[in-house]
Structures are given as structure tokens and as C-alpha cells.
Amino acid sequence: MGDRTSNLSETATTADIDATASDVCVLLPTLNEAATIESVVHGYIDAGFSNVLVVDGDSEDETRQLARDAGARVITQTGTGKGQAIREAVEHITAEVVLMADADATYDVSDAERMLEPILVGDFDHVIGNRFANMQPGAMTPLNKIGNRIINSAFALIHGQNYRDILSGYRAFTTESFSQMQLSADGFGVETEMSVECAKRGFKTEVVPITYRPRPDGSDTNLHPIRDGGIIFIELYRKAKTNNPLFYFGSVGAISTTIGLILGFYVVYRWLAFGIGHEILAIGAVAGVLFGVQLLMFGVLSDMLLSLHREQLSRFELLEARTQTQSPPTSQSSEGDRSANADDAISAEYTDPQKSYNK
Image (cartoon, rainbow, N blue to C red; front, side, top):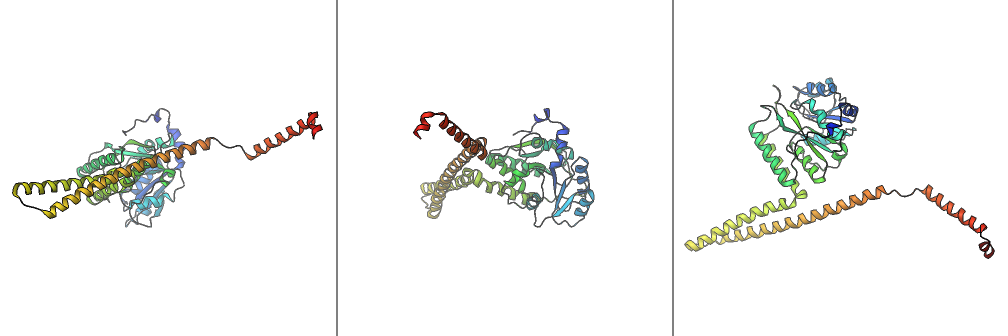
């Protein structure tokens, strides 16, 4: 899926989006963001978003007080991690649409209209802001860029959707679609998990170009590239179990089979060339091949079952849609029909001499 030059913008106007801004809650997860939170909150309020919710991870600085002074509603999360903060915060939101952004001033408030347009004017469920579309110099380290590219490519391979920037923290979504997601990641893996849920559940998801800026001086990142990158890769693989079981089981099966074959060729070569036997390695080679083949077979069967399950769900949803369009007659109209039929029968009885005589 590429970045959109929205077709909706041909019919959408700023007034259309401003008219529904009251249905939007701006969600800002924070942890020690005193250097930027005040300007970020002021930016969204000045842009017309009166409903700004800050969920704070028990910051040690003045983040919460500065956010309140700027006009935001502030809650302190009961757990830890960005993922847990988002799940808890959404429970406090009554608006129909959520615009989620980081509080470190790396995202541009002027992109909010572009982020919300597919939902407020179109019929999309989830919008992802693509940071790579307009990334300013110094906004991301070379290591982070490489890691992001690898993760996005892996996501497209495993889950069959190219969202271009699945780790973006600038998102818009409906609270209804969010309530259907099964999210468990507590840390920075939440963006990956949300992207997987969008692909898994078939949510209409749009990717829009946004500006990504460097952190201002005095603002420190809470992201640890190596640790959090490893968590994200594990999350990608773990979620493949229910969305792409062929990859989940097949990848391990392929590795096991390959290792078994390499060991097997080595054992055979040593035996034929030097007459040296390696019984333990031979047993390991056979075990590796058998284990790998079994996993591959299990992956194929699981993928078939998943395809059948999705097909059945599609049929049920189609049947439900047809049932809802064919509304049954009301009891009042049914009683009226019965009454009309009874009146017709009585009238016919008195107007038909033969029937009256026989009676």
C-alpha cells in the first residue's frame, strides 16, 4: 500500500473535518516529556482539538502539571509501558475517533487533518502516518532507519500488507475498531501489534505521508534500539502464529530441515572419504530432518484450517448482512393483516347465500 494523494480531498473540505473535530480525542502517551509536552498540547488545542488526553507513565519531572496547565486532561497509568498506557487511556475516551501522537514534538500538528481525513470523510478504520515520506535530517539515526526498513519488509512478508511504516506512533483510529483488537504488548511493540491486528482483521487501513522531525534539544528518547528492536521482531513472529501459521511453523521447519541435511551430507562425506563414522551426528541429522518436515506439514495444515475459518467467517458476515437488510414485518402490521383477513371472511360469509345456508 503506497502513500495516498487522497481522492477524498477532492470532495473533503477543512470545514467538513473541523465540524467533526469534537468527535476526536488527541491521545498523548508521555514519560518524562517536560521539555516538549506544553508546546505539543498547545499546538493541538490551537488547531481546534479541545479534547486532549495525556496518559503519563508516572514521570519524574513536571510533565503532568505542564500538560494540565496547557489545557489537557491528564491521567496516570496504573501499569508500565506505552502499550499498557494506550489500552488504559482508550477506556477513558468517549469520542468516536482517536488521534494518537508522541509528545516529543517530532510529529507535526499540521498533519492532523491529513491523518483524520480518511476516517472522518471516508470509511477507513485505521490510519498510519508514514514518517519516511518527509523525514527531516537527524530525525532518525542510520541504525534506526535500517532496523525500520528490515522490520517493515518482514511485516510485509509475514502478514501480506505493506503499511510502509508500521512503527509509526502517529495514528488515527476509531474506538470501535480498537475495541476489536487483541493487544497485549506493554512496551513499544504496541504499534507492531496494532498493525498486525489491522491486517489480521481486515480493517480498512490507509497510509498517509507525514513530516517527522528531530527531537528538540533537552528531550531524550525512551526507545532502546537493540532491546526494543528485538522485542518487535519477537512480536512479529509471535503474531504470525494466528495470521500466517505456514510462516510461523514453516520457517522453523525449514531451518531444522536445512541443518539436518547439512549434518547428513557431512556424515556421508566423512564416511565415504575417510571411513570415519559419526553416529551421534547421524542421529541428530535424521532427527533434524524429521522434525523439520513435521513442522512444515503442520504449517500447511494450519494454513488450510485458517483459510477455511476465514471463509466461514466471511459467509457468516454475508449472511448476517443479508438478514439485517430483510427486516421482518412488525407485529402491529401482522395483527392488522390478520384482522383484515378475518373481516374479509366475515364479509364473504354474509354476502355468499350458499355459504350462509350451509352454515
